[in-house]
Length: 161
Image (cartoon, rainbow, N blue to C red; front, side, top):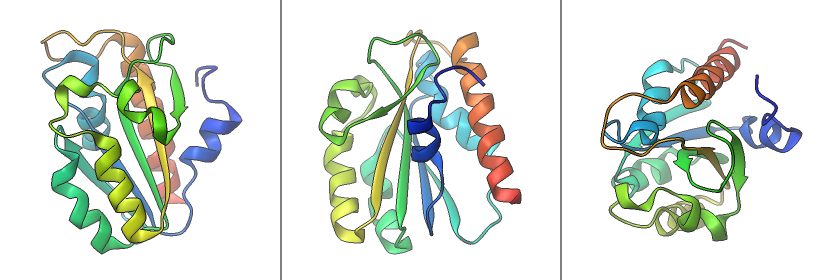
């Protein structure tokens, strides 16, 4: 795994009780397709893990997230924070809108997830993956593809534990 898998990232990705993983993004915008690509690689079987792929409209899954009553919510999306393509970073909630690829989301993600957090009391973690390209095309850059593969391997191993 790349050197961006810091202790902070490992702790942020670690499940805690009922853990909900939410992926965001558009497969039509190059590396913004990270979320849908990751979601397609996961198939949780443990009852304490759940995946919701919110695509470009996280507000549409808010009620499902609230109804499931998670203890922890991990949101993964392509981001722009000035890192190297494929780099993982924990994004503070106050910086979520600035780092998120806003042009693909119809409603600010921070608003949706603050409502979900408030209604569930869940721990909320936003993980950004530095995008290399946000061009209007399908397919991830090699760096983001590697990160997506590593994330899928990580979560699929947790599911088997």
